[in-house]
Length: 336
Image (cartoon, rainbow, N blue to C red; front, side, top):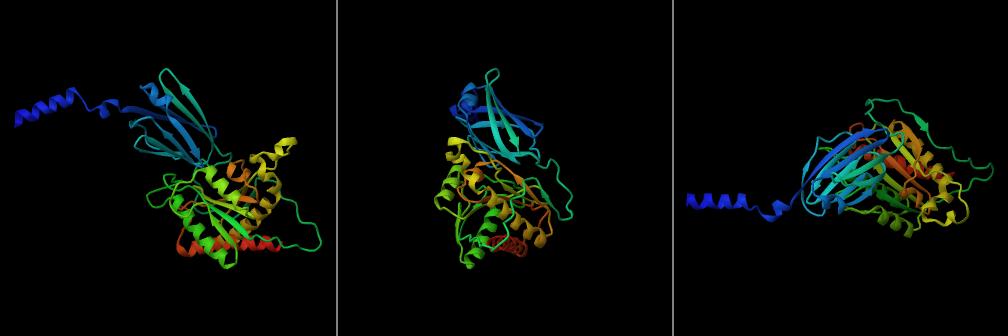
């Protein structure tokens, strides 16, 4: 019996299983540069690099290799985290704006330059900070004096960021995808009691591509699109699309849909930011960001990044306080 077992082991060592023999090895390296993280994925097998499919959505970069692989990588940094599932590598990159790809031959390498949002916080701030509002975007024009016209926001699309394998910011204690979904559902409940028609781009823990979210929101023809995310800082950041000067046929491009709504988006952002600062005692930043979830919107649209869970206690009571603040900001905008 011992002899048979020994012979079997020798055969297995001499002729490994095809799936083991064919499994490629991928080495991950990274470097941090000015507002960019360069990630290099290297393999001895050319097809691992040449046939790898790369997709990005929000803070997630998904790299799907043609076969299962063994990953060799250093410990994750504060700028990005990674995990492997089967033949897919998931990179969660904090503050991701867009990516640039480069495939090199000798040795086979896939280079991902992940460009970050300008002004992203490189270090975690102190837990305590005096509340303040900082403007990094132009102030919207004030309403002309005269009769105040109410601006009804009857239909709203709430966009809880991430979902499924797109975790967003995550630690052992919480994940961004779960918290923003919980907050969105609570906000939906509150707004429906105010007779608002509310839609969610996702209602459970599932992945929805960026284009799926955009097309869903556009189809509803809402009065507002509100996307919810989290930051790794102790403040709130509210983003609106930058105002563009359009010429000729540019105004008909899908990517310029927001141009006609930028002023209203800024007004809504400031109303909500004001109530959040007063009720939650946190700093609020207003910023411009050219990303599809805003620029492709055919209605006023804002993206709110909430404080990280390391700096804000997302208890049931505080979530209710946050939701009420957002709702009161919307109601204040309606009143003019």
